[in-house]
Amino acid sequence: MSKPCSDITSDMFDRSCVKIDLGALRHNLGEIRRITKPDADIMAVVKADAYGHGAIEVARTLVENGASGLCVATIDEAVELRKQGIEARLLILGCTDPMRYDDVVRYDVDQAVYDYDSASLLSSEAVKQNKTVNIHVKLDTGMGRIGFPTDGSGTEDIARMCRLPGLVPYGVFSHFAVADTNDDDYTRAQFDVFMRQIDELKQLGISFSKRHICNSAGIMRFPEMHLDMVRAGIILYGLMPPGCPEPEDKPDLIPVMSWYAKVIHSKTVPAGTTVSYGRHFKAERPTKVLTVSVGYADGLSRRFSNGFELMIGDERLPIIGNVCMDMCMLDGTDLKKEAGKETVVTIFGKDRSADELADYLGTINYEITCLVGKRVQRIYIDE
Image 1 (cartoon, rainbow, N blue to C red):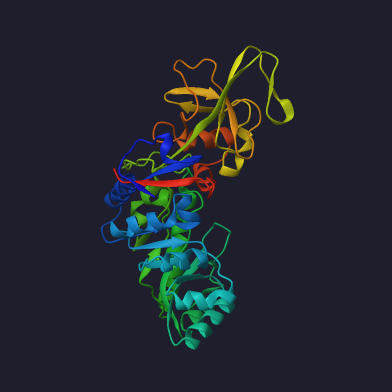
Image 2: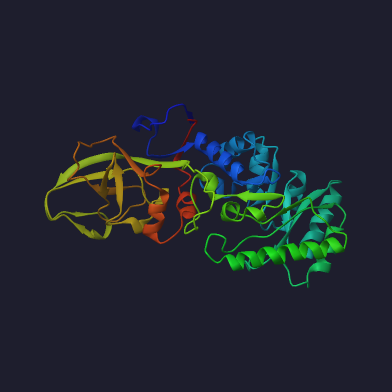
């Protein structure tokens, strides 16, 4: 649903909505382009439904505004983009079960590879369909997740794999573990071993069109490591990697997502009244209870119960009692202005970052946006 206006009013959604500002998304991509080496491609990470923002609309906006391609996590994410008319390069960053290799080849998706046996099966599928598939060789330089070893023991397997019929060794990549911390020595060590492994492969006649290792923090903090391609994730959506040291040239980022619900019932209860499951809140005075149309099934964690504040205008109201599956309750007793049914409630947005929710829960902003539920309406605006 696309809206030309920036203000969300209660008649624009039924229970809860997130406003996705495509103008902010464009702006952030422009900032990333500004700080990225001109000859380095920008691959935009749109996995997990574009971090909860909606992969289709986000992908279209990014591709139309200069992204060289899109990174996803699963073959289903890639197929959905293809079926919606996205023709840009798509890269699956992780595992695809060999039983789905037919779709990898059929839909012209680039695939990360990190072991010979799986690559051999992908080769067989490409030959079967009389097509080729671009592979990106994943190297484990210190993340400890997936990837060929970089101690030299995997070099021959990588070279042999890259010569399999139907496979095009298009890319080679790795992933920084601590680029968003002050442990720069570890990041530089990862980069050095990455480049050393690439040099070893080059000596065996294996070269790649695209070398890429920089994530969002790497893009901002290590411009000398941009190489041929970078992968922009959380900063596309206007959020900084939590705890990331201030980069020398910090991009001017605008949060893309804002989350709203509304008051669906208002009443005043006498002192001594308990609220919600478990009766963990007991009113110490006559209390105005505002019931709000958002709960943990929408992504508002139950851990926000009894204390975390939501906003009406610029005023903060504590949640009272346990957050329910579909609703939560606020204490509106001290509100300076009247608030009743249909009053819009802000969970987070440009004036109150998702980082605040993440800090309260002891997690990261990535998780906050990713957990906004599918039933929460997405409203796309373009400011």
